[in-house]
Length: 246
Figure 1 (cartoon, rainbow, N blue to C red):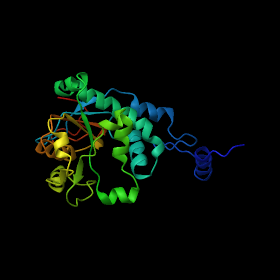
Figure 2: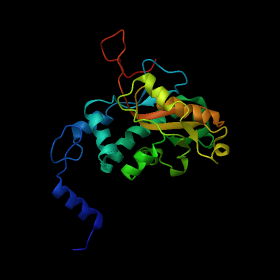
Figure 3: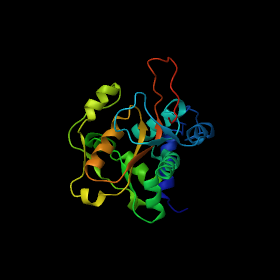
Figure 4: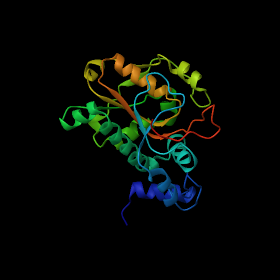
């Protein structure tokens, strides 16, 4: 029997660590059909955080970042479950298409054959080194359908804290002025409509800062697309606010 490196290595890994669904923990399935349905069962929605920060771009997102969806995203990003990339890319692609279709500038550029830049949100260098990969860029390449459309234009100009656990105000202060366009790419983005992509949007601080940096470099209009969105609690309402536009 011929040696099949990819398949044989996968079989060896699963022998040592049996497949387990990251959404529900069910053994024997790397992503069970119930959790896959929860991840991809709905249509992308226009989403705004509560409160909505100034400069927040029109953003289309998939499901709420909760339950099985949260487990899937965490496993993909933090536990090196790269096998989950295709399922997440399908969700991001739907949000990407919705964001472009909802913007007259982006829609017209696509229909006339002019470029639209798909721009991954930047990761800290330390995170990229520790993971050995850039998950959001990988996801953008899968979701875009055209690697040439993906432009790694944004970088962090200074060190920032891990955003997890920070309040909305602290996140904004942490990222304020931290993102810039990579040297040498400003001219290429001039007047070009952009779609910033990320895995999850919470307070909107990251997307605000990415949009600011692109606009400062002279880009065209900026919209955004994410896999999932964190439901926010309104201080005047004890219930979780829905993931919805408006």
